[in-house]
Image 1 (cartoon, rainbow, N blue to C red):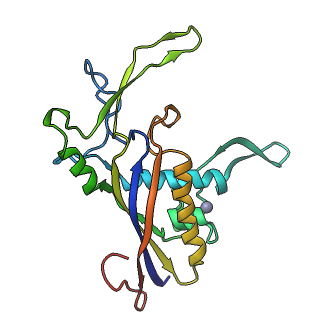
Image 2 (spheres, protein in one colour; image 1 turned 90 degrees about the vertical axis):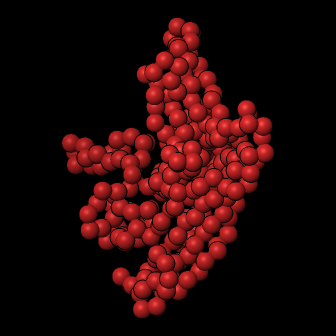
Image 3 (tube, protein in one colour; image 1 turned 180 degrees about the horizontal axis):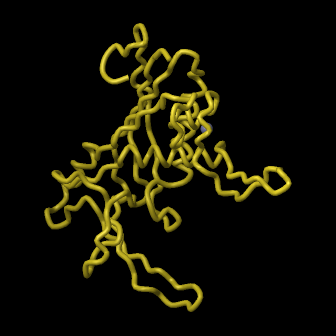
Length: 238
Ligand SMILES: [Zn+2]
């Protein structure tokens, strides 16, 4: 397939509520945090892994358009096993989920190659400045939030867990590159990516979403619109 152009979407991810994203756990230590925020190991600044944003966009779009889990009944009829939708791995050429995000586990899918690249979203300069302006004692990139787990059957609280969050008001710089190949419906693909971002806004990013974490807002523009020459990117990564 011949590359036609790459479209760069870039902007900010604003944390409307605290964001609990993709770190490790040291809950086994006394006073440990059950869920840490992922950070750059050198600067200790939190970031949003591109894989987390991409995965969430995909799963939200699959809820709308993806395949459901079907099982063959004894009568040879297909019956719906559950409402839970599986990651789409159909690999069909006309499947937007598979062509934009990649066919799940499927080798040599007709939908290939994956059209989207989602970069890690780094903490914005504004947020860094905001933290620098705080008195030293108050400076932190993360907040710690204690969540009580209520045992509903007996109505008592289990030992509370502590999670780390990126505080509300912080922002990150994000970038998504959409590659358009000959024969692709560019408008549809671009609209699908935008819908993915909008779907994440109406859901949440990261963990503890049902407890209020992870509400985000995207503010972005199309910043690059680069035609390929003879199927080769003109500059940089396609
Ligand atoms: Zn598919």
